[in-house]
Length: 282
Image 1 (cartoon, rainbow, N blue to C red):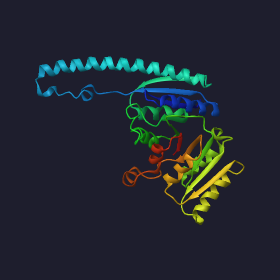
Image 2 (tube, one colour):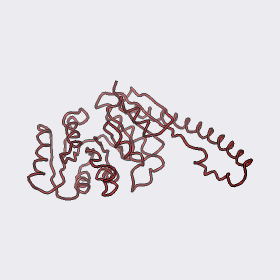
Image 3 (cartoon, rainbow, N blue to C red):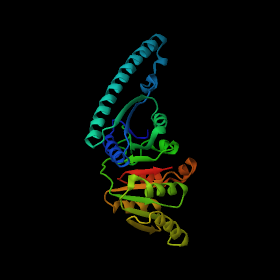
Image 4 (cartoon, rainbow, N blue to C red):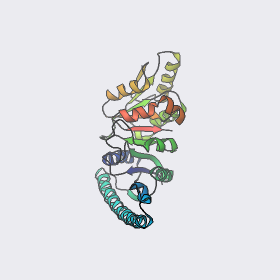
């Protein structure tokens, strides 16, 4: 059976992930799999062991102590995870979702999410993890890796979340944007929501055709359209700022990682800058 996969950690985004997952679960009538991952650590690397310079006997005793500390830390992390899962399940149930499955895993965050997403309709994650939640100029280090590798839509929670009242669709005619358009038109997730289509580019025949394509797909819906020649990240951000209660939908990472490294990515800029949930479609 399909699920909503909600990945939580000890960051300030855990509550927003739960609230957004609950909204999606109610709309799609699906259970939630609540996932918490304890990352494996290397005791020596984590504690910057320098004992190789001070003698073999001392090094052996230090390594034994590091192992004991690591074991104690692992037990602490497991207990914290259990408490976090329990609190998150209560929050989800308070939001009206009764079918919540808790899953506690050890391993890599990206690898575990990719493993569990096989049964998921949507993956919900926070914009930043516990180690980066105050780095407001950045997104979490795992976000781009998950989105690039995932075969599922990724719903990224902002710090403050309210049930979305409007869908803002960033559309450029690309295959990924086309898949986002199809979901916007047909998924129960967006049923009844007004849609604002945003096309960034010159007011010419090509961009008008792109806009018309989206309008035809959303025929019969409450639709507003914007065509603006500004930079995509600026045009989309301006529409989001003027649309209270919005959720941004867009195709994700349309260029190769190498090109993104050289010229930047509209996807990354928008995830970092907008303060609303973002649904990324590969």
